[in-house]
Image 1 (cartoon, rainbow, N blue to C red):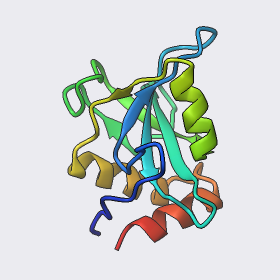
Image 2: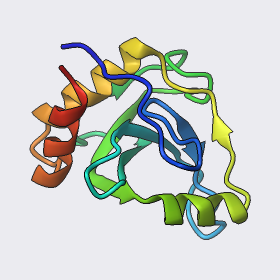
Image 3: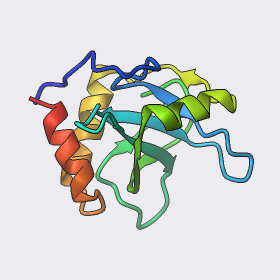
Image 4: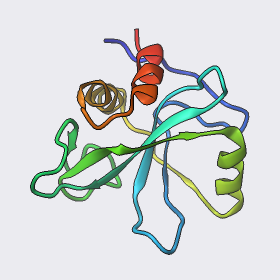
Length: 133
């Protein structure tokens, strides 16, 4: 399964980009752009969270697979979201900063996990399928 690269929205968002949640009321999670833009111009994003017993292990990410990851983590497919250009612009206005993009190998692993996970909503799986060839 090959990864489609280069898709970009007006604010410079690309598949494989990452950013940190800037909401002070919630934990600092790394979010990954896994697919898009859709026909509505939205990107599919998933966040990483610490591995815990019994969690969805469709995509386990080890320390070192991305500079931000310091311990065993997983992609929280149940928390997937669509991100529009408008909402991305709002995030940037509130101080959201991009982090290092994921490697092509890690992106492929995240996309494959999204297709395999029973917790990934069908609308996100459809967008992922459209992003891979």
